[in-house]
Image: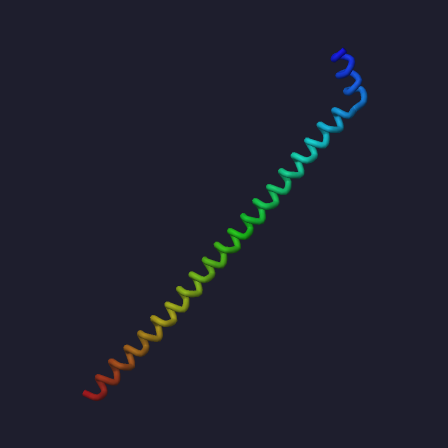
Length: 84
């Protein structure tokens, strides 16, 4: 009796349809998860690039400030020498 029921369900194709649905749903969930991971990785890389750009800009600004202070120091030394 059970064997006939299983055989008729398999012949009907409903088991294959249910299995096919679960496989499709599982693959869809994996695709959504992969897309979210890709978005997070892209956001992280963008943040890292911005951080490196900020560090480079700060380093360049610090170098310019150091050069300006060096010029001011030279002017002060020359002015002090000129007064004495």
